[in-house]
Image (cartoon, rainbow, N blue to C red):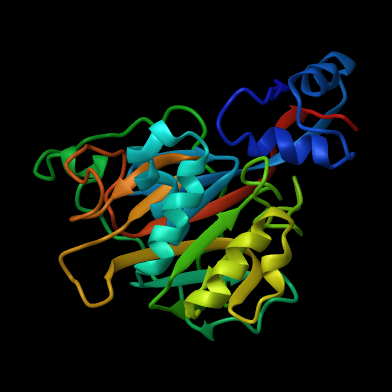
Length: 291
């Protein structure tokens, strides 16, 4: 079933990506006209798995600086859109680094990133839905609905990047919002996700990188790793220097997981702050498009 996207939210990254692909301004009228015309295009769909819990994403996943700015700035919502810029400056001044690992299978041409490794494995995650099963009683799980793509996890091409990290950003389309373009080379249905990683960066160049997000120029920075991946396992860790404080995992603008000591960490989330397996299904969804 084709889906029509109308820019009526806060970020409107998907609508912006669709309309910008033909140079149209991101307006409600242009989006509605594209739906009326009825032209269609395929869109990759991301499956995020932890134990028996699954979450489907079409836009992005963020951990570290970007997720902290997006979610923690909610406390300043009374400032309007200025809250993002204000809180970004606050977070850069008081910069956080997170320990952790990224395991991934790179797209062809990106094999030089990271170090060779094997599939890290996904064990039962504390706090996931699988914990609700009584292991003493045999049960038969009937899986309803779509379960995500079948991936060869024994692929010999696995690579690993070890932290600490300032920011990890995984994107499905070029635009994250109407004025933020994290992944300028992203395609709607190429079967890959664009991974933007920042490990170390002085604060002054970081300010420049953040200002270049509006046109995608940040990917030219020597402090940015920009590559495409087919599948990834995110193993998030605590803040560097403070084991009692962990981070936030933000998917499509919503909190998927909160670690201990993070903003509103007492609130229940769909997944635990632990290993996540991220796969992509090429062209699974269909969108109405201007072209």
